[in-house]
Image 1: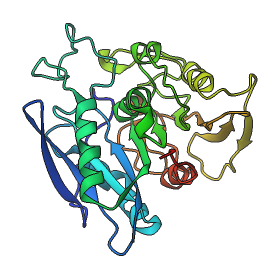
Image 2 (image 1 turned 90 degrees about the horizontal axis):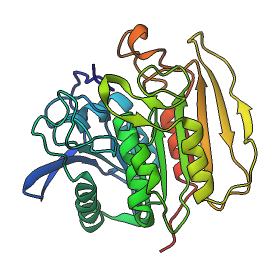
Image 3 (image 1 turned 45 degrees about the vertical axis):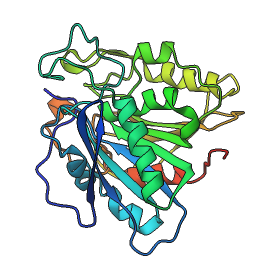
Image 4 (image 1 turned 180 degrees about the vertical axis):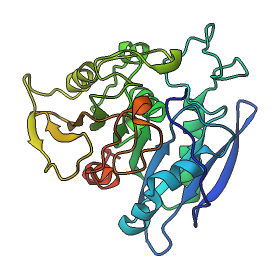
Length: 303
């Protein structure tokens, strides 16, 4: 069982495939640049979930999320990277004890170096704004976004992950010298990445609890102690979910969480791609793309 199921998808108009050599491997990503927009433009890196197959997972993720539509409407570049073997090296995996079917080669790829190469190429080959580089991802892709947030903080303006956590080893060494705006969209009924922390599904390592992950970033960003401000979104769908937007106060850089009470493992507002007994309820009353972009666009990294 994968952490995020692959989908059969049609092509997404306007996506262009790019490749580069990283550690002797050909790595690739799909890129969408708005047709009529003038720059410099923000750029969003969107990392697919794990357990997919082949080397075109980014295209499937583009189709599933419809982020290209938002990129065209709101004038930002979006990159959909392809992992090497269907999974990102997100900090959870022990190279000496890899789960069955994860990295069949037996070698953990240097996906951080891949990100470095992609970012360099995107900045060189498009009219991208280096002060507005954003990260998002789902499941394994959200875990990897957290790793990059810790290890490449000074290149990133904000990170916003969906139904993911952070590996304990990543958290233990996460001590960036600057603050970073962070948004996490999580379901407290997620059977694959547990909200309370612990083992993730199919022997894919451990995650901190959602509360512990937010506490980590509150410490990094110097937030006030105490509970966050919380707003309950209108409950408009009979989808088993209730949405709460939480914002911590006094932070040097924003720390926010969208908690889906009763929510499961998926991109909210999109397809219930697997049975509820497997992934829980994919909440339908959250415009995930809109929430992500509304958060990201408020933040810019110092030159």
